[in-house]
Amino acid sequence: MSTPSLLLFIAVCALATFATRVIPFVALARHADHPLILHLGRYLPPAVMMILVIYALRDFRPLLDGRLNAGADGWPMILASLLVVVLHLWRRNALLSIIAGTGAYMAMVQLGWWG
Amino acid sequence: MSLPHAWKEAGLLTLPVMFGYLPLGAAYGILAIEVGVPWWAAVLMSLVIYAGAGQFLAVALLAAGAGLVELAVATLMLNSRHLFYGLSLLKRFQGAGWRKPYLIFALTDETYSLITTLPAERAGDQALAFRVTLLNQGWWVLGSIAGVLIGTTLDFNSQGIEFALTALFIVLTLEQARRLRQGLPFVIALATGLGALLLLPDRHLLLGAIGAATLVLLLHFHHTRRREVSA
Picture 1 (cartoon, rainbow over the protein chains, first blue to last red):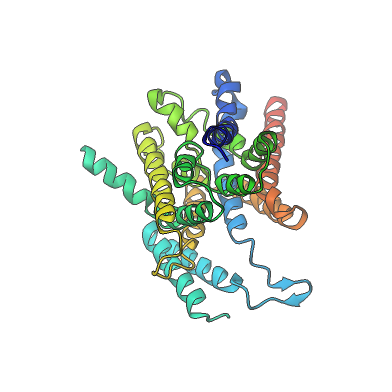
Picture 2: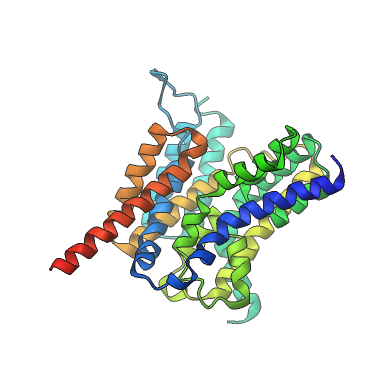
């Protein structure tokens, strides 16, 4: 692929990505104080966060095609997630919860405890 | 707060994102080189596109020789969940001044999560939001450069390190719950998230769940308003 067409390709992708980010700010600039927008500003972030957790854990399928699927990375994922929750409720130290959870997950998948 | 101290504060906040973005960025860089994208183009994409899944898709489409229209449509579809992020940040980004265009440009899932979970007294701190946003893209670009340079996997066995992003989302969900002390958005998210998991293919999962959650919140708003009016 020639350099100009490669640059064009990147430009189109950059513009399309930016469009999805900027459209609300342009289209609704005058409505930032509308009660509905404030309502979404209050409730949407926690909902999105919870959905991102569900999305991140979506590979946990203990039953796959009707059969027990214990070999996948699903169980380490759930165990490490529980560790993060418990640690965070206990100490409320974000870095500690994240580093301990990630370390536990890496140990489980690398040492193949659930292989 | 002194400037070095301010950057240190932002750096600590973005540390979990660093654990996620460095390996993911490297994976992206390696993939880009593998399918024949020049190194400078791979890094340029991390600078001007800056979307994790979007860049993986772009590289795949580039390798498949896809057309520009196909690229534009696929990118818009994949990233349309950003529309909902903007909806909930309209008020917060007001008065961000010269920082606002960049805050909007660099609004990824992880940056959105960090910014919306800042403690209430820091919520209006646009300078902090800017530093967090800039550092996050910095980790992503650094990761991409590392991937492009190395071209193969590192000696260090980093398998599983992406779990840092999952852990980050869990911690931020708990922080949001502690702050809000209302079950409503979490119940809605569980319903739409699990519903999407059951009903939708993987590539539409996030958009479907977030779109449905927004719709339910709209209905909830109209419902509570009507009750207030009639009361």
